[in-house]
Length: 131
Image (cartoon, rainbow, N blue to C red; front, side):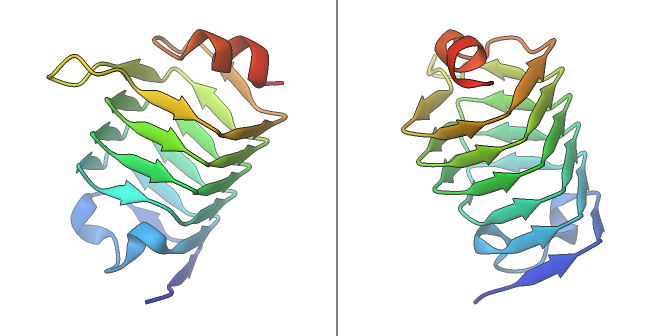
């Protein structure tokens, strides 16, 4: 199922459309979502993700363009094969899951991204690959 959503606000997990995990979203706002175990492999363009909590979430081959992550918490999340272009990470926390597993960043591409006041962001990602 291919879904495309534009200029919509999502304020809880139940407000997300069926098949959102592989969807395309443009100019959408996601706030206060509490996501456990779900993954995302779709496309976000010009979106704001604020005060969301992601636990054991898999972000595989997702594309993020001009996305702002604000005050989000990622617990044991995995980012693999993603592309981040002109994204901002502000006040985000990347922490271990309940089994002690760190967030992971594998084979991602970073273009003109910034981060500020984040904790637990993998050092090599936060300093070397975010430009």
